[in-house]
Amino acid sequence: MASKDAVKSSVLEELTRSGQHRGMKKQISVVLATTAITLVGGCAMFQDTGRSALVGNWTNSMGTVWVIKADGTFDVDLKHHGRRDAWGTYTLQGDQITLERTGGVKPKGCEGPGVYKFSRTDDTLQFTLVSDKCKLRQKNVLQSWKPWKKK
Image (cartoon, rainbow, N blue to C red; front, side, top):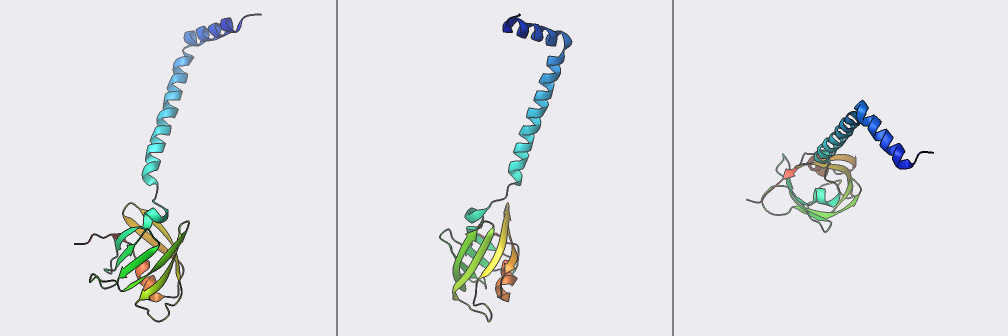
């Protein structure tokens, strides 16, 4: 019975003679390169999620400024005049946000909470309606939001 070392040596010699080891090295290199490219490319496509995706100062095409704070509260400047017109609290569950007005402007039909799904890609925050009876809130929230910097 041949020893394990002799068998390994014999197999290595055969691979070297046949050139198969070069082909295997090339296949392994291709697989590693493909994996690296996929991982790097995939990182660029990840969206921000959770509280970190929302916290900040935002504005939409209507000129509304929305300050979303890490403590679960928000302020809204509807008229973009530097003063909050409405404020409230929010809660998160995955990619769903529930907004509750606690003060300021209270348009007719805006007594209850508004529930939306959200997503953020780069510098755009977008919401889709789950349920909300408040038409003014819908009109504002459903706009695309971009970061806003105080001048």
